[in-house]
Image (tube, rainbow, N blue to C red):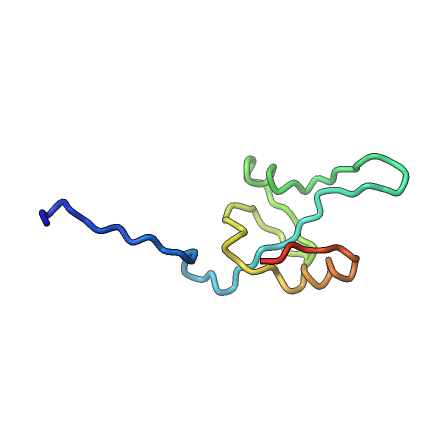
Length: 93
């Protein structure tokens, strides 16, 4: 091997940054649909938060500017509990 040959190792598990042990994926309510009516958006869009660097608020009350890959982290236990208490089903995995 020459000095320019390198081996690339592909990781099968996500690599976490320092401090990620306290990070969670939070659930954000972006709007609702009343029983008789159309979807009512709230000023709480995750996509808008990412694009415009504006904060959003999770069910658990956490406020932050979204920017990390939510698939790397487990669902916030408080958000999950609130969602289940409202009868929502959450994706597994």
